[in-house]
Image 1 (spheres, rainbow, N blue to C red):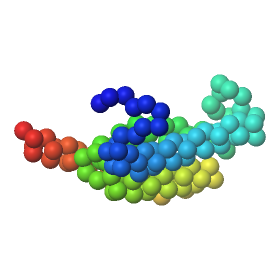
Image 2: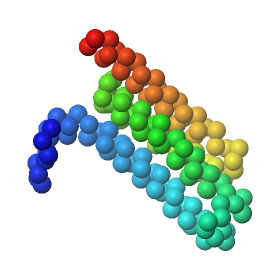
Image 3: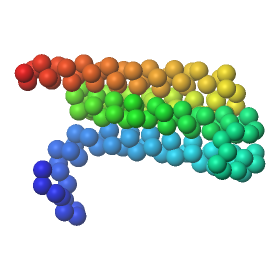
Length: 146
């Protein structure tokens, strides 16, 4: 593929993956928001960097952010593979479900660690559908081309 100059677009990429790109960016914005909450928590609860422990309210904010980071590689990779090999629209929809789950997880975990299960379950289910759906899609394409 030739390099694009300023103002040019590759129509096929723009048409088929704009939704996935938008959902990816919103996912990263959710992660960024969780990170800002950690920064505010450091100030509010007097936990200076590089410390990651201290006040329990800070630790819950920190863990919600870290847990999101732990899930991002699996989720983002599965999201894009699902979009390429299964469905752009369904990938975007499942990505939105993941975002809702992660926001719910972050807000719930900040209030009480034991309340984080619903948000965690929502995002884990969305990730599992993306991951195993992508696996099936890749296998189907491989079989069809070999």
